Image (cartoon, rainbow, N blue to C red; front, top):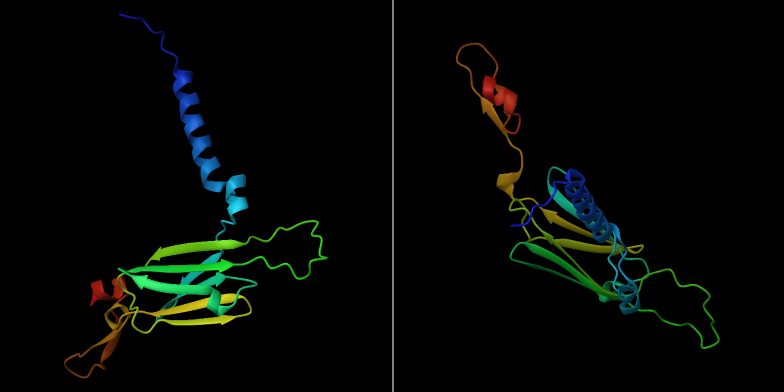
Length: 166
């Protein structure tokens, strides 16, 4: 049987190493092989309003025919390729900072979204994809009929405080 001296700092160092590894892999821009392959990922904004969910992807320098969009099993996938095209044989690039090559982005859609009437528009290098919410997911108002001389009252079914008081 070996006797090992307890070192509380060894556990802390191990935890710190794991956290550092996690941050390094999450926030790194990839290694050199990724850059050589052209792996990149467009920036995407996702927001919603009362009737729809909107996804906007930054695809500067691309054309609509360079992008494919599909929805399968409630997963939205955007796939495309930005090609590096040398304009002239005499061009001698000193620096290339924009990313080129193929990309794939996938997003799981909430069950409240209907993919039936999805709409995609491409303008000024931004792909805007609009997905309508299902009717049952939209807020609706219910009228309360009071007996007597009181006026009918309408409440919002999404507002929990009014529903609980009613």
